[in-house]
Amino acid sequence: MEQLIKDAWSFAEIQLKNEYSGHDIQHIKRVYRIGESILKKAKCNHLAVKLAIILHDVDDYKVTKIKTDDCIRAREYLNTTNLDNETIEHICYIINNMSFSKKDKKELSYEGMIVQDADRIDALGAVGIARTFQFGGQNNREMYNSFEHFDEKLIKLYDMLNTKEAKEIALPRHEFLMSFYNQFKIEWE
Ligand code: ADP
Ligand code: NI
Image 1 (cartoon, rainbow, N blue to C red):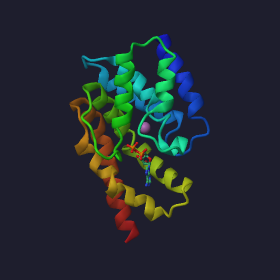
Image 2: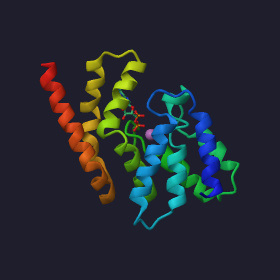
Image 3: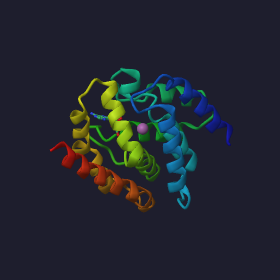
Image 4: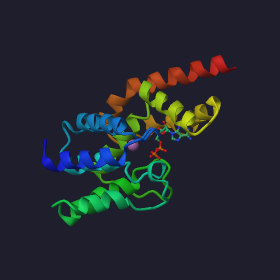
């Protein structure tokens, strides 16, 4: 593995220690593997995609409890590497603009679309369901309150995916999510 990637992993691992909000290092590892699958045939800057994935949650409000529009920690880290400024800016742009909850959205680069797709795929399927209820439990929410997140976000994600490759990977996870969603409603009512 390229040294740059290895070092970024070490950094992210430290930043996301003791994280139980669904943004732990296991989430990053899953998103990274999904990203690699999407990248297989993609002609683009693979390094930017991989680094953006590794660093995409170290500045998340749920992790840092600091409200900011810029990925301060990721940027600070990238500045210690020998990456050129343009690549650093590109990676930070992706991190700053990929979130579902982000207001005034800006258009993502192709690399950014892949990172966003990979992150969203991890919000689907069995793992996506588990993350949602774990998040709710961590925040002392009632079960039904967590379930509302399906309507707010999860059931919409499949249609919002950017790339064909991501749609292929996501389809069984989306279908599983919908079947859970429908069954939950039946049992609740
Ligand atoms: P993004 O970074 O795209 O804005 P979030 O960080 O808000 O996404 O959410 C990541 C995951 O955390 C969600 O896919 C979900 O599993 C969980 N989560 C976030 N917000 C909620 C919520 N209000 N209720 C339940 N789960 C949530
Ligand atoms: Ni994420």
